[in-house]
Image (tube, rainbow, N blue to C red; front, side, top):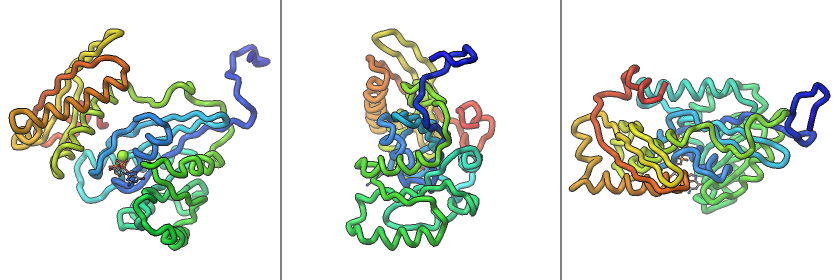
Length: 307
Ligand SMILES: Nc1nc2c(ncn2[C@@H]2O[C@H](COP(=O)(O)OP(=O)(O)OP(=O)(O)O)[C@@H](O)[C@H]2O)c(=O)[nH]1
Ligand SMILES: [Mg+2]
């Protein structure tokens, strides 16, 4: 459609809405899973372990009458204070100030002290905060949701409360409908075909980190980062060389595993996901390197992309 001024404008329906939606909550409540399942693409890695998400990741979904630009944020946490967690918390705070709507996520099993800490970051008079009560598939008794909703309203004046199961894709459309009401009328910000702002390179590095998070024991993963050292692509295949960075010499054998078994498994699973994402054959080589205390080292964080 050619506008009167002569400039090209996208043809959007009258009343089309578009806006930024922050998804916040304490670690591990299912923020990234929720965004991935709403979008239908893997834009943000997930794991059973808290503090999986480290960067702000955009996930975009375009419906007939609205475009939602989700901002996945790291789970806000107060226990471990390194330069990395400080940066993660700062990104949650700054995101809150910039968005049109906020989806605050808790688990259906009830409020926890960590949830209240995140809640205290929200302005008291905001009229754009929706509570998503996630993991409803885990609560055996659906009646327990009613008192939980009442308790939630006494804690904060949420605009709406929507029980969902991100994992089982339950009531995600209801959540979208509530969010849509909060978005301003606008042309879409992004090409409707696009679903994230992140490059395949970033997503590949994150995929390797996800497999390490999922396959390694409890303590190690927080000290893991991934760099992509080589990326060469043709139409048919991609050759990727990556390094898993650990914080201590003693971590190296744990990541490598007996006879290299652990590292091979991390590589195998990551390669399969990356091949699916790129739609081509992938040759992936993963090395392990020690960078002492990187998560508390400002310079190291910068080179690893966590600034
Ligand atoms: N049963 C169940 N598990 C879920 C649901 N949504 C997420 N999970 C699980 O909860 C865990 C944490 O999910 P994530 O999406 O990584 O959580 P997060 O809030 O992004 O975590 P951080 O990035 O660490 O803050 C994973 O093991 C998910 O599979 C759900 O609806 N039901
Ligand atoms: Mg996450």
